[in-house]
Length: 155
Image 1 (tube, rainbow, N blue to C red):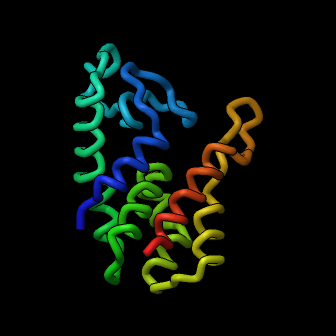
Image 2 (image 1 turned 90 degrees about the horizontal axis):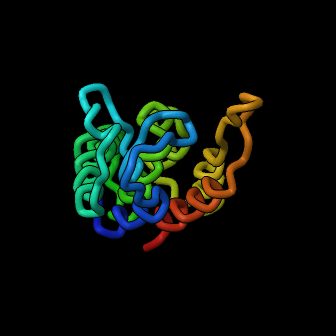
């Protein structure tokens, strides 16, 4: 299964297009729609991306890494909406976070409990404050998790 246009649109909405390098909340150099600049991609540190270039990079990231990872970890069939929500979630929390999440466990159990799904997504709404090194609730992540849960539960 591949991510749909709806899923890509969700990620784009949440990540926001940034044509130049910036540091994400985790302190990693990032460009475009949340593409973390990896070793060997040093040219992105000084690049200015167009929106079509950023979209192509996002599609590459989703296809090669996050979509493929979600597909490998699922033990049962899911709907397109569920897959899209899971890929958006994985893109944001990373493959390690995704693997540890109750979101994945519930998906593999076939749960469609609104309460359980919404709770599982909402647990991942915190960022580390760089000054205090403590986890704090992020309004942006709270909204994103609600959107992902809503898409997951949509028919």
